Image (cartoon, rainbow, N blue to C red; front, side):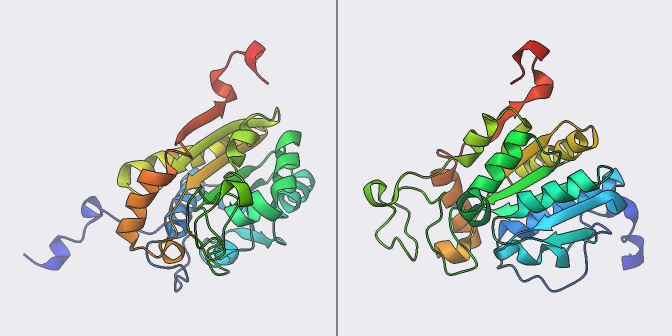
Length: 262
């Protein structure tokens, strides 16, 4: 049998979205960012909204997100992506706007920005990558670092008396009246990738329907910062992060009767 007899559309098991830019990936092997980038590109492509979508990239490992997905992007200062997205969405109400932020960007220096934007119910999608560490700048402790977790600035493990508790900012976001949809996902297995993609699509559909803010946390790995193999990091995430940052839907106003909406 000739190889040309096998290379057929019906036999295709993996392909890049046409929105994925063919460039050298700067993320570490095993990093969750690349997976989320792929499914984000697929959603935008499948929904046919490339020309309407504007992404706001953060400061952190995903600072170069605009190198991988062929849409319009705007760079924001550290933590200020929600404010930038607010300006874009309000001045371009026909556009579909999203931010893409890590836990250091969103939950630390940008905590006030995200809380107020969500409380106002700005019509945008927020994609929040939580790997419990500052990945780009040397593996320092982040607001979401777990108790006992070792980082470059907590070599003995996070101590509640010294460092406080891990910040469950997604739970805080879910309490705000302006937020329509809040979910926590992961992207480390085939089934979780499918669920995460479904959540991202729902969030974009919400923005198109002018329902307010949709917030998606993706519990992620940083095997370089955690000093683990990619496989080991996935196992550690399941055993240690999921009990604290429990995957699942936290809020969905579409599933509530009108009298129960916040």
